[in-house]
Amino acid sequence: MKQFGSNLRPTYKCYYMRNKDKYKQYTFDNDLERGKDHDPNFDLDEYIRKQSQESGQINAHKVAVEEDGSQFKNAILIFLVFAAAFLWANNWSPTQAWSSIFGSNSGGITATAPPAPSFTIPDIPAPVIPNVGNESGFVNYLLEINEAGLDEIFSSPAQQAFYQTDVPVSYLSELIEAGYQDLRYPAIIAYYNSDVSLEYLNTLKDAGYLEDLSYPAVIAFNNSGVSLEYLNTLDEAGYLESLSYPAVIAYFNTDVTVDFLNQLRDNNLLENMNYPEVISAFNTDN
Image (cartoon, rainbow, N blue to C red; front, side, top):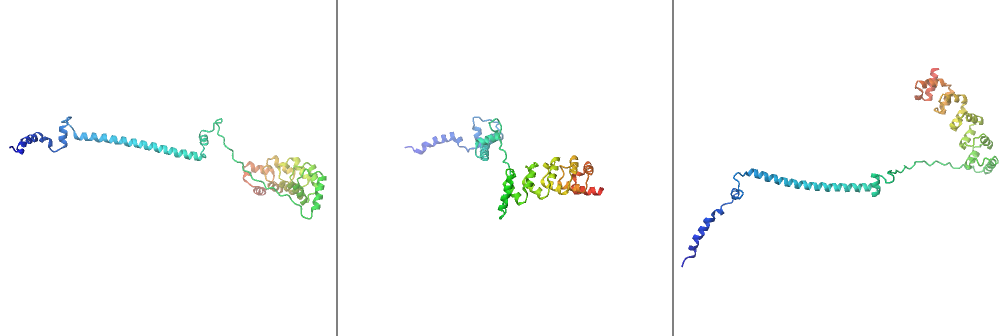
């Protein structure tokens, strides 16, 4: 009987000899040498460099794609924020927002609302109520005004003011007959209480000055005795419109001549001087 082990040894030995090269220790060089595309001039450094470049290009392309996507998302987000802010500024009205950019479709003109006018409510004077105890006197005054036909010319507040300031109905009748029905009642009261005669008013009216003068100026000219001749001289030289009535009175009372005013004006001095300085210069020169 043959032993089992003795029959296997030759066979195993032959198999090992045939395949011993297959179990050599693995190396990168051996792997390259056994390749079917083995190149004896193969450059390992160049191979590694090319692989690195290809890998870097792939990664760079991937990063570029990711950055492009991120920028597109950011652009959409910025546009949405801007659109929301613009709609909010136009009361969330797309029509109003469109019109604010491209204008209205009505004739291509964008209408702008005019600013609200600013005004001040004037103070309305309260009617003058007659003093207690004078009811009968005021009634008689009203009757006299009615008999003179002045009740339709002067208002009730004016009639009350005339009564309390003792303006006689006869003075009112003279003013109306002379054509002064357009005078306001404060001016009438001031003229009467300042003793401005009807003759002086007629003089200023006929010369064409009365309409351009305030009633304080008329009263001041009357009380200061400013002559019509002096007013005409100033007016002809072109000074009356620009001078205040205190300046006119001061020049009249200090005898400042128009020739002296012309001398100052011709030397470009008058426009920079007030009337006290003009008077001082006139007195010094004379």
